[in-house]
Length: 210
Image 1 (tube, one colour):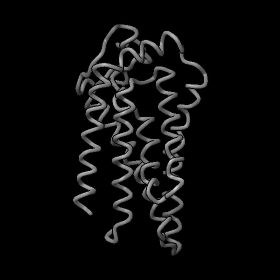
Image 2 (cartoon, rainbow, N blue to C red; image 1 turned 30 degrees about the vertical axis):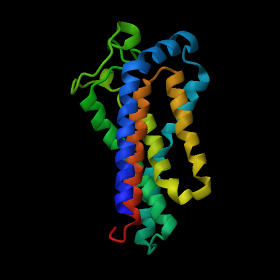
Image 3 (cartoon, rainbow, N blue to C red; image 1 turned 180 degrees about the vertical axis):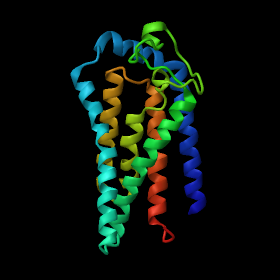
């Protein structure tokens, strides 16, 4: 079983990298250009992105409540561990995406930061590793990362309800692309990072050693 799981993980990671490369080369620029030209940041797209504002504060509150309950004598059962995993995955993913943004140094599709280069405004497209600054923080998508992490942590325990966990990430990505806030490859990278963090946290929470 562990070998099968490792193999599946390797295939998933390889597929994610391939999809990101295809997106960077062929899809990112035309999709960003079309979104800017034909959608012009619709209200529905902007509102969908707000869904991703919920996991971080929910995770902080969840861990605070769990900590207080632990001091009062509570010990998590199976679902308690799952929920703790979702909280930890969210916060770990949030920290990880900040580090990767700094490493990647990618300009946004549009110049949301005054004077910053972008694909739409200055025709700038690519990666400028360790450039730093808010104008070079498009990759990976933090919104997609943070919304994907808890959903991945909850996926297997959710059983037949698991497909519903696709709704929040898909809605957030639709909003990000519709508002031209991110390139498609940013969202793919964010989803891959969030899923990785979610699976890791779930695995640790299910281990008797944790």
